[in-house]
Image (cartoon, rainbow, N blue to C red; front, top):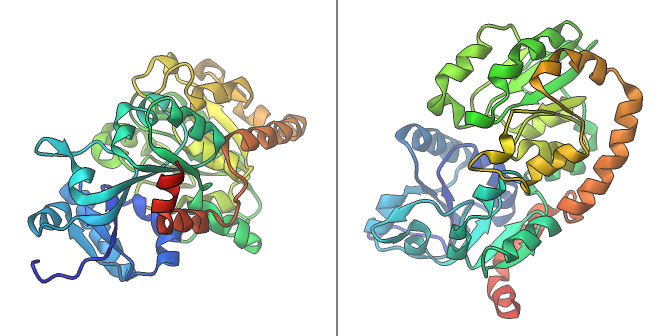
Length: 352
């Protein structure tokens, strides 16, 4: 490692799903412009390393980078929750630390005090920028949502069959994107979601951390013959393209649907506002004031709701207003905005 060539920029990857998040930015930067620094479990590192090798990206384990004494000009990560000895790991890895927001939702997590570890935070839009001012002194830059740029740049692919899946073209498609742990809707709604399969293609894509963290919850899905159940790394972009309706619960996935202006229905979990990751003013809680949502006891009303064209026409107007609240208008070129910020970081920090 002592003679190893390092780039000036590193992306900290602790889960293989981050590849889908960063890929549009990586393509613009070019594979010689950055390194991937791997962290996390052995399973996650293995999956990430395989993806990096397939794409021709250079990657190193975090321990090897530290052992080599390498400190990047810029290290990009989506959160700062790992430490090395007595300091945040990202401080060891980079002179400048950039947070690249992963999602909206779960405000207690996203606006934690570890945001103060960053110099610059790349966020989705005005709502996040304002909230970040309340929890840290980092400079913010509104980039949009880079992982979904191609949705807007390739409109001809909207409605296309997702790779590896077989859908009935005569049916509309429902995409169910549950989160994990206590806020997951799987145990409460799996039966009613499966019942939709008589009239719809129903694709279930689970949270990327569920496979290792909660196999007993995923086992619930095995009881039902959904159109498809995806528990591996898979780009949500392809799923959003084919979805006529998106069903979600908490975290970031409802906002991916909102960003892409998809018909969105939310499943409710009791006392979600009291969860350690959310809070009363968490956006995934607030979203329920305007986006149609269903309690567990009313779950058998899902077919009626999905078939209500007047409801979805009214919701389309609501979504347009919410998109202005949560996202900067960089639809289709958010990755360019992120790259511009990284290339001009010193100017952004000087101007504050």
